[in-house]
Length: 238
Length: 238
DNA sequence: CCTCTCCACTCGTCCGCACAAGTGGTTGAG
DNA sequence: CTCAACCACTTGTGCGGACGAGTGGAGAGG
Image (tube, rainbow over all chains, first blue to last red; front, side, top):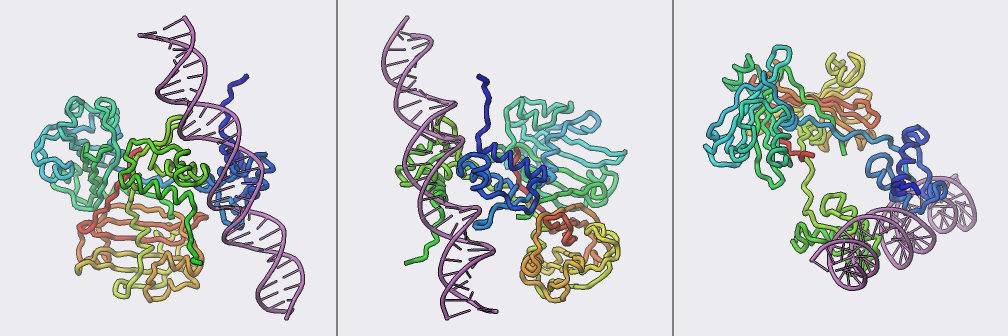
């Protein structure tokens, strides 16, 4: 009678094995019961056991060796949590005291190049300055082609509480697909140095946000004082 | 007679379909032939076709809809090709003219901290300087605990042609599992400036290589002159 | 005309079986 | 004692069949 949505059997088998690994019953390095044994114990077909084991192997829980057996590796570690300065900047909400400039200008040469538009195409510039403990911790400048910004609040001097990405998605259904970032160390330009209050080396990040078709939605420049920022990145080696 | 190592059939089926997608025979949005049709055309069992299609779906080539069919999505875009300065440094072969120093020293404080060993533990230092068009394009320093390096050629002043990673794997079966990188912009230290021939801002990368158990195998410092380096990174947004 | 049922078609899952191929220990011939 | 053949075990791949469930169109009934 009950409408139980039983998950597929191979998923149930996976769960059983995962639980045994997490409980320590199967310790890292141990050999798992053979496929035949699991078939008998769990009363399923070998197809099912094999599918479960192969999926677990793909997810990194176990390792399979032809002719030897399957061996426990442990709970797979979460994927490389890479820092994405461009993405987090586009998602972070703006606040009134950080937003220092919203203007409409003809695109300067280097910005036009990033956006893939003609020089002097009208673009909206939004600049924001983040502070930590009184010190400027980043200067973020966003350029959005007027064509993209039209009909949104991007050209208004009020802070966008939800962040640029959410706003573009909600108002114009524009989807972020991928981001190209270029990062380098350099001396700040004159106006950057002024905002930062120092001319010590900075980490400069240039990011371009593309839509699914590959067109540039907006470009971004982040200036991070070197003394305050370390970008950390942990990744697994294949 | 010929010892042909035929790839498994499901892989052959995948290849056929991938080629048809790339040639345009199956265009994006098109419905693929049904499993039954493919079974007849390719003269394989349904198990094989299903496995091929499910793998293609996981890789993003196609999309499968229960009750409707399988549909072409197109060649999957390559995953974020992130630059991994630490990894490439550990894999790159050394040459006689780039290797400038191989010594054995007690670990200074900051290195001991990176490696997770006691201060003054003996470590091998290997330093290499890469040049491009006469200019120094990077200074790379590697610290390896003596305990790790013993029995290898890491303490010898000869260049390791195959790179450090390959050497450690081949000689001592030590596996790289993951790398932690920290990146920042700063002024070069005095001796770095001397090697670089300038005191312009540099990109400093600190990398720690861990084995599967989480222990540090070696630590690394890369100094990249800001004027010569831009790290580019393209990633998909979820 | 509209609506509901039915049916042919799709993919999702599962089974039992078969054989190939890799591994490691045992055994027997030399 | 040595070594090769053998065997018992493992995983890898493949087949045919079966049933379930989702989809969409054709056709019967209103």
